Amino acid sequence: MNSLRHKAEFRRLLKDYQPSSETLELLKQTPLVLLLGLSGSGRNTIINELIKTGRYHYIISNTTRSPRINNGVKEKNGGVYWFVDEERFLEELKNGKMLEAELIHDLQVYGTSVAELSAAKSSNKIAINEVDVGGFFNIIQMKPDTVGILVLPPSLDILLDRLGRRGQMTLAETAKRLRTGIRILQEVLNASFVQIVINDDLSEAVREIDLIVAGKHNSLNRPANLAIAKQLLLDIEKYLG
Image (cartoon, rainbow, N blue to C red; front, side, top):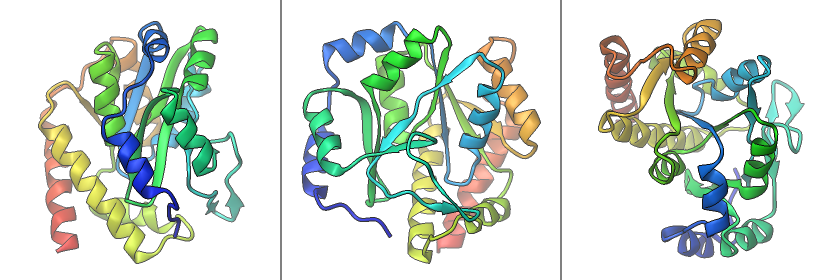
């Protein structure tokens, strides 16, 4: 299990963190799609499929955690994440060079650097990223035209199965992720502007998100998706006791 040596300093800096004025101006000029989801919802897989269309630029997040072994393969630096040391991450926070950052599961820090935002703008494509719940709402507050989408599995059983395929995860870490999932669901169910997409069939979820971004589809307040979100919240709470 990962742990932080400078947890107290991260908490202090993140408590009232504000990006620099240059970072905010760059954000304003960059079309942006954010995917929020529980661990195991399949956000990264969906993003990989959207990137293949040639219309999206993936923003690679920074993380303080170590690379994991997934299906026997070690994660590569610059693939899904930039694996950075705590000192470098802290320095970027102090200089306002992070768009957002959050302490996740009380174990690691994740965030989006201004360098990635600049690369996205230069590509003349739609920037897309998966972020955690605090960053999700903070960015939308800073940039209201952001397309914000919550990706969910269709059931708790499928979620647990997906989490079980991730190597090197203890029962305690799984429980932390599920508790984070409760927070995500509670906050989104109280936010009327977040679209919900159910990732049951990958190709259909990718198609639906692409249509939402293009303004050709709207999942806001869709009864079936809201019902799944509410049931998932109840089931996780019951599972954790």
